[in-house]
Image 1 (spheres, rainbow, N blue to C red):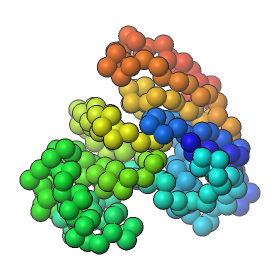
Image 2: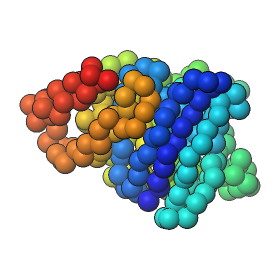
Image 3: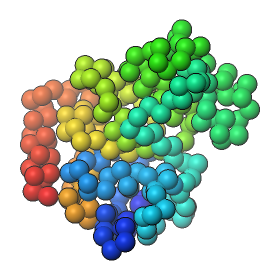
Length: 244
């Protein structure tokens, strides 16, 4: 269990996030939603240990009741863009996180290559990012993230740059991957449909970036999440966002 307690983030005299607390369970997908500018990405970046030094942050982070300091090996962060380096092949990009973690290059490449078929990337090993589609680039980014085997994954709007059809396919694909390789996930999204299709739990941040406005468990099985089945929870979430 990963606990964030009393997180506040500010710049000069302005609070971006105030007294934010939550608990993240392993093997559970948690979506963090809220109005633009409420500090969702700042929370993720603090957890990842990449918050801008111009921002001040106070708060406690514990893993299994033991205090830790970000960045920590238990978390892996994936930004909004796929962040693939254009001069590296897809295999080289996918192995980069392992290499940064100290895994020898040959071992890291072998580790990622065994997953290319599962991730729908077979045949792309020696291609460059500009030679594959946006959806395949995103799969490569997910491979780079998931192969690191951290207990928790931090995703910042991972599908925002994709077209609507590719986004739906990638959402289903990610759920399938997590079913085979369960992790704790904290994902920032602005898309209520996306949140209710993917999440086991939805956290709602208010516009002022204060304590959570809501912590909602999504108990409907993913295969049964039809428009009708999810209509009520989406209405509730919409009302919470408009009220904040």
